[in-house]
Image (cartoon, rainbow, N blue to C red):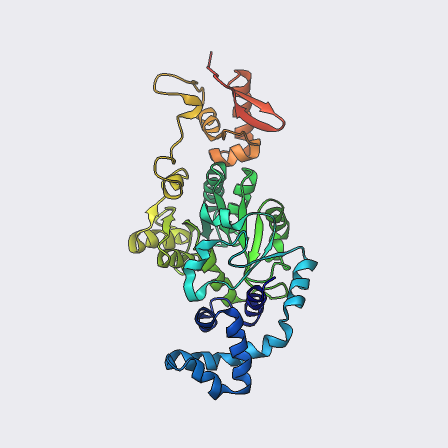
Length: 387
């Protein structure tokens, strides 16, 4: 690695996420020189001040920050940090190397110094065409169903699903993307060596296998409350953020605020007016101008380029033509089958049906040769017509 990359690793270990003083100093001097300045300031604070004398207000804040950074310096040797990553199969991505998501540069002084990644997903591609799906940990069955369905719709169109790996809406979003065979990225509040929460460890292992688990801090750092709030800015840097369920006071709304600050699109899912779990969503629509997501497919208009959001009618059907359906479930599963096919469970999620309902409808369509099962994937039969 280059000297700049090594310095970035050190900064990711000595400064907390979203530390504005660290970000300002690194932007002003460069990561290598900023690190040298810290070491010089430890020996001669007055002399170090001269280097930044033209901005005295910021210098005072940076000098005050030394007490946060210097105690961690001895344990932040680049070789040791890389060894920690290697032990858990993590790779390191920094600006200027393949895979760095340029969208994170929009965070300015609060941009991460480096990313620690488990999983092979290309983060640059993921963030460029992405949707963040966030919401309450104490979610309802309705919220989890909608989160999974929105994620499945995104995955079908090769839109990466970004979330935080937490219980509730986050987990439902990751599961929905995985079930549809898509890419999903979990941004953790601690090191990637600790899949947190422990109850989602198996899910996060699946995310690693087909997407990525990401942290801006090296392995060995524990998830703390402030780190959960800080990591939300990385999630909010996705192209679109969808709040599925959120109480009026909710961490998910902090992600929404980051999305607004970054001039990203924000959408919210409506719920019952009597539901406290949806109060934050309604507030986002009313007070923050969030787009009301009336159906999962509405997401495509926000993420995809103009003119690319809408598919042709299923199977090329037009008014007066195409398959005829005997039940509503048949119509739903047929419309939910992606072009490349999908397992029955993924079709059920996208269609908004139970697994049993989807399998029964797929079976009925298969008997009429409207769909076919090939290597475990359901697909529409080419040129199918109902008898």
